[in-house]
Amino acid sequence: MDDCRVDCVINLDVSSGESMTTWIWGLLGVLLTPVVAGLVGGVDRIITARMQGRMGPPVLQPFYDVLKLFSKQNLVLNRFHHDLVICSLVFTVAAVGLFFAGENLLLCIFALVVGNVFLVLAAYATNSPYSLLGAERELLQMLSAEPMILLTAVGFYMATGGFDVSQIILTHHLPIIALPGIFLGLVYVLTIKLRKSPFDLATSHHAHQELVKGISTEFVGPSLALFEIIHWYETIFVMALVYLFFASMPILGIFAILAVYFVEILIDNTDARVKWELMLGSAWIITLIFGVGNLMILHIFQ
Amino acid sequence: MSIKKSPWIIHYDGSSCNGCDIEVLACLTPRYDVERFGVINAGNPKHADILLITGSVNEQNKSVIKNIYDQMAEPKAVVAIGACACTGHFFAECYNILGGADTVIPVDVFVPGCAARPEAIIDGVVQALSVLEEKHKKAKAG
Image (cartoon, rainbow over all chains, first blue to last red; front, top):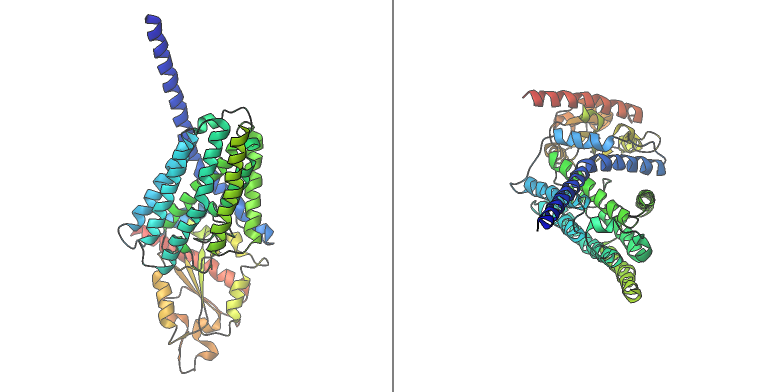
């Protein structure tokens, strides 16, 4: 009896210790994401500039931009506008935090989607036609990308036996070996999530698109700064998804992230924006062939 | 400090021969690459810090210029680029021309030239940065 109690106490201690560590990881993820993503954004802009034969801005430029935006006047259009952006930030940060804490992958993805929906609502809260069209296009982008991202979670479940990030990361074999189709499909829809050409329909990193700035047209000063920070968190989330495919070999995982991001920059600089029909159609066909196909083959061989 | 390192511009071309308009765009090309200084051609008045105006103001575009200026968030600065935007230049006598950009909105920096050279335009933007910083400090002080 006593032994059992000691055992239980020890078990409790271990589990509370584990949960402490996971929450520390989550907190680290949330705190370090803006730093890493800002630097990635700076390097992205330099590589983009070099591809266009220019020098490009300093590597810290994204931080200068966000700091400046926080110091600007916020022209809020109505009482919902800015608050909805804050809600979006909260859910997107939660998605990244839960991911780094090793929680359920589905929960993280749904939190990210809710964050995205709040962004759409913020854009819908205005009267600007550019903002409204941007919001509609953002919904189309979500419709294109989310099925593949959900299938990625299902793929990880089939390959590793669990939805928990902490479990996926501890597998001994490389998930990419079982999920090459899912990986290719995810890389395809990453262009949508990273808001890069040819799928930067809702808003673009570059000015002078047909919708001015689309979904972010009406975000001013601090609101726009929060929008940029939300995008930083999104970027890190999808890059962390890429890493999960190589979870048992961390160095390979980091190389995979760098390679995928470089390919995305290359695609961004070499492709013109497409119409929404092509984005939705191609994303769903890719999801069907690479995503569902991979899952079916995996099911047959398991 | 940060506003000096990240000046986002919006460019409007009024009644002009488009010479200065093209020189403004030349600043963004690889030869001059103003993105080195963090300058972005925002194309959206709500995101921009500096309004670059080329060409003179006429009866039709005065409300457009005023509207763009009003939509910009504080602190903001205006740079009039080229002789037309400064004074109206040889369009000044035309029946529908009001004159330079300062006839409708307050202008902070005037860049002369016909057409203004890209070096002069970049110099004008740099001068507008100190104007922006001053306005920022004033706004902070209340």
